[in-house]
Length: 300
Ligand SMILES: [Zn+2]
Image 1 (cartoon, rainbow, N blue to C red):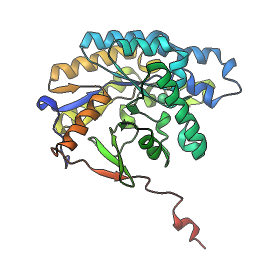
Image 2: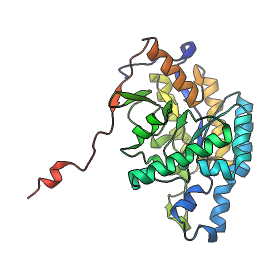
Image 3: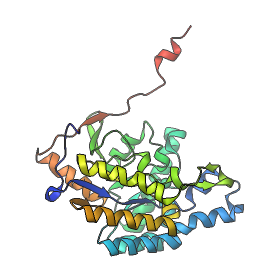
């Protein structure tokens, strides 16, 4: 089914990365700058992530002997260093997720670059090194984002959805590894409800979300793809939902032949395969469009 199947370490059938986007209340503040300070219940809903869920995630990783990746906005590193440090000190990967959960493709090029650099600065100040990985908040990857990521020296991105296996993004001959995911592995469509902030998804039972995650995993296992969750501590870290996560990991481990890795470890593996000519990735040139289609201006 996959035209360029990728060899996974030790003959594994597929690669699984449990990754979490620890947004906390960054997006709440960015999207509602005038009133976020008054939305106390909403703040607590989001802060449940760093305060209550993250210790639970550390426990989860230890229980199953797996390392996870935490994608964090720079502002959250400054605001919730205890949460970030708990994961980092446990040997989990911390990757970058914007600064204040800005939606890059709704900003000017200059504004995107401002927040992008501010995020990197926050990461460097805390960890004393640059981040290897990036996920664009809200999947809002812009037509400038790839260039910014390449120029800043990132190793990989995990925001796009263009393949089943890792692939390569190319901007005028400069490249970046892409570790693709998709909306069905994101917990937002199943759980994100908040009337105050127009999150109007009907809340789904964890068993239903689990059914989708598990069917995606079964297909990944059968066809040899990469399976990357995009879960949020404030959503999937809640009791009934983390129980579903536990059930899913138990299922994966019982099935066997799964390479559990951080996204950084997967990027290292992919980079090695390419360097040794052991596998040929698909290459996608970006941006595909630099302006709206000319067909629109040709009308009349
Ligand atoms: Zn996010």
